Image 1 (tube, helix red, strand yellow):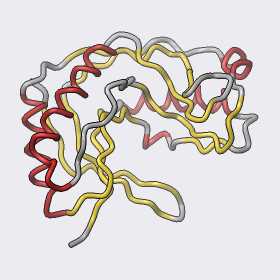
Image 2 (cartoon, rainbow, N blue to C red):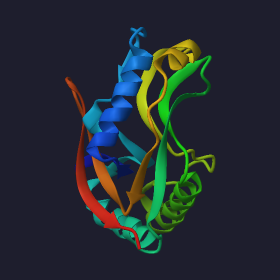
Image 3 (spheres, rainbow, N blue to C red):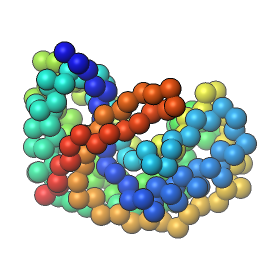
Length: 190
């Protein structure tokens, strides 16, 4: 049996990806150990599933579809600001934050968790943490760094409003040239 590294995400329109990428580039230009996410790969991850047997993709897809079909589409806003996990003083993951729509993302995440847990527990898909925070990862730092000044100097971008009407199942393919994402399936929200 073949495995695939899978995750569930919301795609971001091209113009928004470009704006977020450019803002991230301004923030990270003096951080040599930053591994930036390519503009084409920018998205909002709802759930990383990990390595899944290809035979189980249909079952996972059914569970995702069940959650998506029962969830109303919604508006969200990329608020134009940069933040970091665990915090700006010891940043490891640099991200663009979500303003309006945070609650909807949290509820969608919890709906997916419940549906996947019920349908897929026999092959290792387990519920994640309940402290889900919707965000757009733009870079990872190899060593914790203080990005406070860089954020202030880079400024912001105008908020971008997006209508979330679907979610997608992606495969993450690790290549020597970097990670590639391939959309396997798409699921419409109600």
